[in-house]
Length: 55
Image (cartoon, rainbow, N blue to C red; front, side):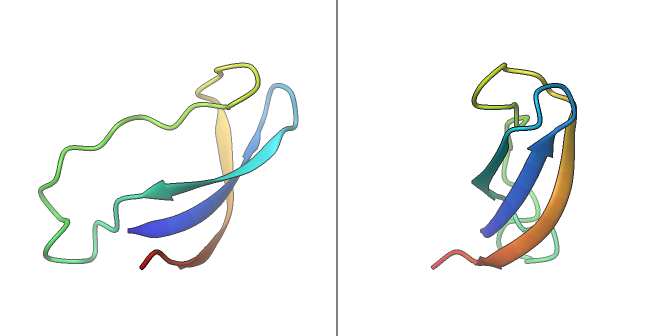
């Protein structure tokens, strides 16, 4: 898992969320869920950066 920071293109809210690391062979085929903004539920997000690998 990775911890990524996103910025909403609609309301400007920034937040961090754990996402699946598709480059990790153990997580490659796991089902994922779309990330949406915590404030306005918009799917229009801009990835800002990967903060760290989740332990």
